Length: 253
Image (tube, rainbow, N blue to C red; front, side, top):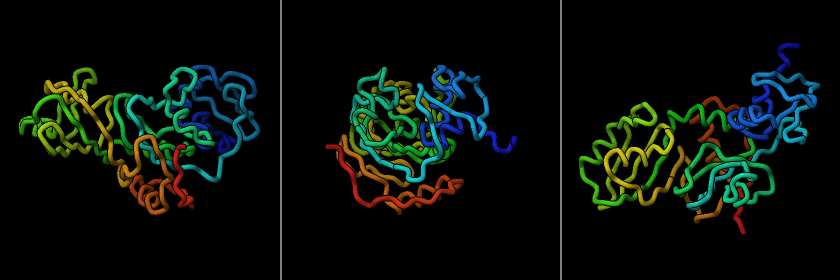
């Protein structure tokens, strides 16, 4: 019997409702019930238990998952809490199925973010977040010096986060623009790094997440191709899922 028990956050994730991280927030907020009882964090679910979120029954794992690449505009917030944030990514995309973003891209930033209804792959990508590459193009408020490039690439101690950034690849594009490839995802990392060196970020665009490249207009999304998903699965290595995507691209009207 114990082998059939599953942690509540994992249950919600595998059902395709949300990521485990978001599930923990829902549980902590008292929005999840098991057999109409609000559970404690860490509670396990039995096969015959009835799990609800905000009164909605959460059923078995979905079979056909959605994997989207979206070009997020400035001003859109990467949250699924549509009740609190009016400029949220879910309402903006208005996809016909429940989806949620994989990771974050802060409100003043734009560019590539992935969304899905597959909670399990969210966890696998986020667990690999200190190893996979994310590439950005950044403009700042004053001319970029060679010292700036070297210090950004060498790692900077961020006082607020009490840690040093990992060494990374930084290249000057023009007088005010540079590209940077990160292998970690600290909160507001690039902005904090620039601030430490007395530069202010003017624009910040993410153009790549691992093998997925930004190739759609601002505010538009598309499904991942079969080839993209296959490579992505190899990069996160522990993914065992098969995927048969629709090659047709979707666009927001």
